[in-house]
Image (cartoon, rainbow, N blue to C red; front, top):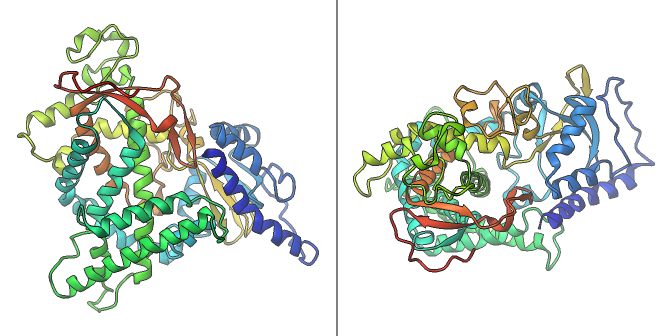
Length: 523
């Protein structure tokens, strides 16, 4: 899968560029390049350094490949990626440039705007970006989201009852993706569970994802054609849903606070006019982005938290006893299934003080509250540390709209700018012992533009608070109900393009408080 994605990305970028290069190489007069270009080389025409980066990503050494450039050239260097001259930048100052400068415009693979829509927030810059983000934040800000913790709790509980309870083993990643889709469908789109509309959206969405990173050739029998058709189906479902929500709002039968679609449809221009702040096209395009981004990033985060928690006694000890693992006696944990194990079969590092304290103050079946989530400080630090070490987004591109001076060098107008969060995240000058999993490093805020798993500055992810609520609610119920261990001895992952653990992370479950009579595990 990773290899096919890499090849598809390479062909998708290179094919139009090769044609363009062949057509213009004899007729175009090149603008002289500035003398103070960043160090490095552009490599071979068209191919440049693309194959090297893609090979590194397929072998899960992409971060190492980029770090070797930093070691050789420093935090800024030039290269050629996917047929275009590129400047690779890293470090807090570079992140501030990438996330804060209007002189850089987003640049996504050609397939994404064709599938998601050209007016989505990932494609916008300047005033349009701020307008769309501001509208989305009307629903996604904390004081609004606190009303939906109970509904989120119900979705998670229902999912665990249906997909985890009574099973000896599960495969985590597909289940987390199913959960995140259900949460988005219920809370953000207001779609009834079990309804035909929700089922059609789920089917179209699954088909659409198959071609998200395919070669953008709209030909019969290609993955891209199938993805385009599925995207059109999903858009029709959302378009009908949006029209119904607008009609209900006009009749006074619903409120903009009901869900994200109703909120976006109900926002009017300042002064009390009737004109929407967002067009219907913008609402639909950004609903598509919410569906894809919210589905993939949160599911990856929770999957890798579960993966890490399957054997981290040190973090568990720090949580339970407030001391280093070397000073902890495993036998002090009466709930531990087998104190003799070297790699413990654990419920998770967070089945401890903060979750036990919350649970003992709850009646049976009582939902979590916003105040409960705010007390899960260590759990969120674990999530942040997971994101620091394995960010869902490897990196992305920007395009220079004008000549930009940075760190003594010129980034020419029209060149790509490539950034990757992991290089900054693994910088020992920012995060001490970066290879060590240490949630305590987030007890104090990270230096500005150093932790960028959710972006930063004006490009901070609009859904960060939604992701926090989703993650904390899910992890609370998981660690209260289950213990687990990994089924695969080889604990590896690949990027395709998001990180994906081997075989989707199969785990063996033990149900807390339930006798081991559930049948044989498939591990």
